[in-house]
Length: 194
Image (cartoon, one colour):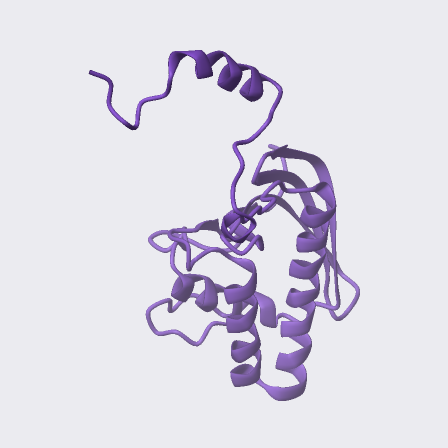
């Protein structure tokens, strides 16, 4: 005896043909939610430019209004750009040392950017160093669906015009709201050779 919920065999070829053509079963419009989570290169470069601008903004806020104001801005930047609310972020800042080389928590990232956390005594605030300009030069961008990985250089200009170049790898994913989030951030000084 066939169950009431089974599909008649005569209907199966139609289902297969419909799937092959990309047709979808009819669904009531109020139950349909289509979210495009694909990442575009334009979104990636915009996120990188926003990160650079945030670094400069934190520096200028520090110079104008002090560390507490810079910290408040850095908190907003971290919450808006990084994926700590999604889970662990794989963040290896440029100027960190053992045993706090990797900053997988929001508190660790905040301490790196603005210092002032006794749990991270060697952090003096990378974002507080008077940066006036920041530019990204990607060597390559790899996009796969809802994630993108970049590798290249970031050039940061100090108050006296001196330029620091760092090698940087970022991985971005989209959160449930479709916002790009940094989930991997590896930064290091270029190898000087022997």
